[in-house]
Image 1 (cartoon, each protein chain N blue to C red):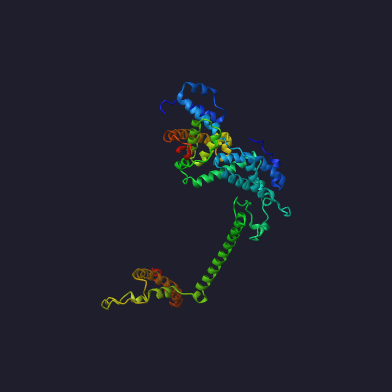
Image 2: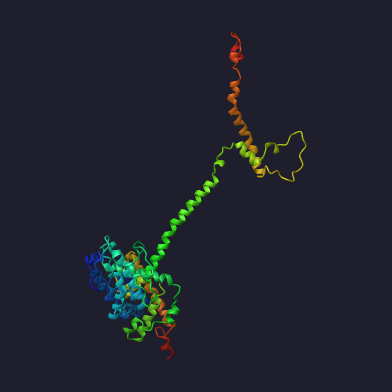
Length: 249
Length: 197
């Protein structure tokens, strides 16, 4: 609305915390745009809440629907609490005989017009009872499968120690296959690859890089034995002779 | 608004006293149904909301803290139930559908004597239905139920400033939509039978 003044918004916002300011009425008398908005506000305040009175018949019907919630109380239970005292005894249901612990949902009376003999709360408890049994069964099955799988994989014969040389040799084949003798001419292309080296040239190149450090390591392991088998120089030389050229100088 | 329920009675009801529970329901069911009716606008749906509200609140009576009026817990539970229903079916009911098939007797038709007022209230309700769920609940609680901004904030669990913002925006949105509806559909609020005459 183009001719609407802005004062009414402030008045209406202020009216949210209480009754409408009488000054707004005086202003609206002189401002047609504000008068429409004030009239609408008044209509909303007086008209929207109408027709919500609860008549006696409906109230009685509602109380009857709520009666199973508030009326039943298992006085024989020692640990009576608010939730449990509101429960409908499960013996009232002829369709099932679930333990009391499963029926922890607050009971709701069957809807009006329902023809089912089993209350909804009882059906719900049955479903939850089923749901509660399955998780641990699935977990037990998973644990059993894991145990069987581990026993299959880690059998005793598979635990024999295997040296790296044997392991790589079984995977890649003998080293001679990858290093042709220098004296021989280049071998013709192998149309039928050897079954001993199935992993391809990438791993072969890796094994070629690995071969050098491995041989150095093995030599280092063998070195003490070789040194022990050789006699020291000082012990072999005769007395009075210089042990080395450095001492002679 | 009925007299506030004493927490002493709530405590007795929580301990399993059937008489206290009956008194609790009798003392609060009128206001609770009125709130549910104003939010849902359908008596059958209001019955369902009231029943479910009592089922929930009475099952957790022993956990309630006496920090405010007991009716506040009922109102909060009922409002949350209705807002949840609105969110579930917000896309199912459109404005045109609600206008094409109005209830047989809307609540305001018993109080708004003038036909013009009935048309305007029908347009206002149709516009309120287009609001988002939470602001919609705030508008209905404020205008229809007469709740204060502080009370709405407690019920919807939002700050008072948020409630005031919702009311300010929603008021303008409702007014603009209602004016558009009144211009487009002069027969708004009438039943199809009345339009056929």
